[in-house]
Amino acid sequence: MTDEEDLFRQLSHLMQSGEVAIDGRLPPERELAERFGVSRSKLRVTLERLEEEGTVYRRQGRGTFAAPPVSQGHSALTRIAREVTPQDIMEVRLEIEPALAAHAAARARRGDLARLEQMMLATIDTGERAAYEIADDTFHYNIAVIARNPLFLEVYDSIRTVRKLATWASLRRESHTPDVMTRFGEQHRALFNAISCRDSQQAVRLMQEHLLDVNRLVLRASP
Image (cartoon, rainbow, N blue to C red; front, side):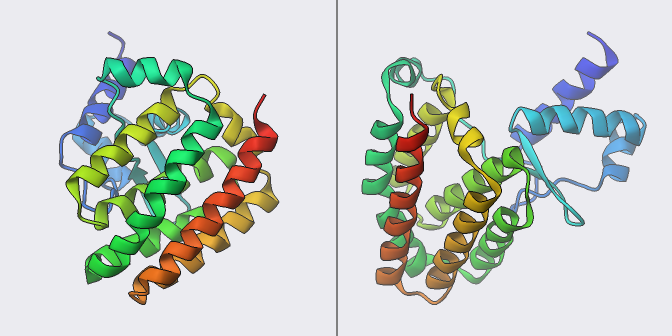
């Protein structure tokens, strides 16, 4: 195993080890370079590779964050991913995520809201499609987390896994023009505001409107 592959393996393990801060932020590059005994330039190359694979995302001036893990060990989900269409995914999301937004508004704690705000801002700060895709995924995933229902979260994890394993997954990224990312970012801001104000009904409405907008984009981009 080359030094580069060994560093990649060690950083990947760090993402899964439970050592990452609760908001997903990784230690500063200086600390990571010292920990793994590599130069910062070599570390950055490996972080860029992890970013390309969707394992981490970066926010200018704020640091590097671990993206939520995907459960790829379930053969049933792999089979479903070969058969599912973008519209299938959106139909399920429209059933599940408005309810998650309502529960998040009712159950979020102060620390949850502070972290969710940072994740929301990450979807606005970036103009890069790949970075937006990860930030968007992280924002929606954390709404599911702060809804505090383990069964709902398991269902949502399955949705995310199928979506990422599907052969057409890159279509969404390619369809995210700067105007689309700006529009969706502002929808995220409104959704966060409803959750932070404990307005469950508004959170449901805004999540539905956002996902319907996403659905229109998915239908246009689908082969």
